Image (cartoon, rainbow, N blue to C red):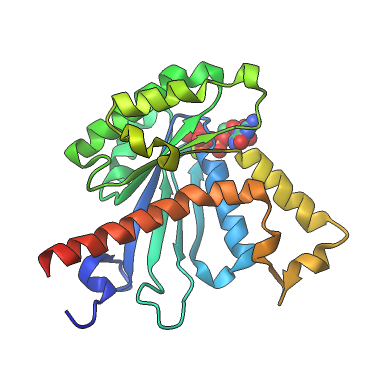
Length: 252
Ligand SMILES: Nc1nc2c(ncn2[C@@H]2O[C@H](COP(=O)(O)OP(=O)(O)OP(=O)(O)O)[C@@H](O)[C@H]2O)c(=O)[nH]1
Ligand SMILES: [Mg+2]
């Protein structure tokens, strides 16, 4: 195969652009909408041309998602790189039980799953249920053909209010979501609240000019808490691309 076309290995969207779909799947109130909001704001500050369509949120007056949130982004172009201009869609599902039907619709055609878990002590059962549900909805593809990464949100909570990370890892391994040898690499923690606050205080700081170049936020100014939010999405993106390359290698 001389030249690999993205459209050979990815679905194309309505505009004919290669794309794939990442679903943030997690219990209600875990922070999925918060994650997507911070991510979208970061893209707008750092690299606005990577936003393909504006963030859609379908929620009730209390801010709870009743259908989905969705944003479409693309990887920045790198000269000579094969995988430039690839689009990825980020979707969140409504966490509340009563919106199960909507969740099924959103999960259709998911290429990767970000298990979005809640660090709060009261959430062990909800996390467990969500891991099982994600597995049921994707069958044998879960963690195989459909890569899975877990993000445990609300790491800002004091340790007494938090679950033991080892208990969450155990849930994941028991459900077959993740191999035990991969857990360190596939289970991440962070805080959307910290990321949001750090981003805001950076924007409001007196030295904001030092953090900008051509009116964009410099990558080296990205706060640590924000890196933690981006990591799981980046990881899933890499896993999906790598998996497609491997697939092509096999059939070559
Ligand atoms: N302490 C803390 N609170 C957070 C964090 N992220 C989000 N929250 C709060 O958690 C609540 C729920 O956040 P959402 O982003 O609406 O949660 P969701 O997962 O989209 O919930 P559903 O739409 O019902 O599925 C809000 O009050 C957020 O402010 C975090 O990192 N730390
Ligand atoms: Mg939501």
